[in-house]
Length: 276
Image (cartoon, rainbow, N blue to C red; front, side):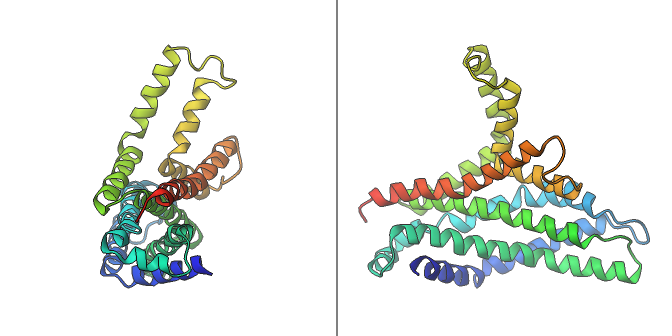
């Protein structure tokens, strides 16, 4: 039961931190501002448009991954620098328990913060809908989209925790986490596009049983941010795991699972080799 114990401790420590309270307030404020802008009194309220055109691009796909990096980067490296990691490992906890326990605990804490931050605006919008100030607030779409936002946060917590386990200092872990954030948020399209063009010009893709376009689509959904966008937009439009792009959605889910598991495993491999 070592992993659940570490996860529970990290969850409570993270939830009680001042940063989580600020995060919940920030989420609530931003979602409320977007809702106010996209909810003219007495007119039809487009919940799906609010989420896909405003909350998604300006909040979920930019702020949530960054918060995930901040929450996870010092998960292991912080305790290594403070010396508390040796005490933790002197108890019946393995290094795998430490790494994955922190992924579970901090991922759950961030998910709770996301749900809490989205809850207050939802209650306000629901009340306004009941009072007739706005029309057709879709609670199901709103709550479902919140799940996708929380999933994206967990993925970046896992990536940052993997960096934290592999790094000997918090500074290096933070640099690694921020570099991955910048790659996924700002540079992914340019980097993968140049890679595909160079590989195509060199003829490296010719022996493969797939086309360059198919590889491009795969690389696109390999980005967890793009994957969550694809899945959430399909959910909001009622086409989740249906239609012509169902294979793209399955690939996106597979890559989200990969990014949740692979970075902590790589970090654990480096962590196991380190002499504390």
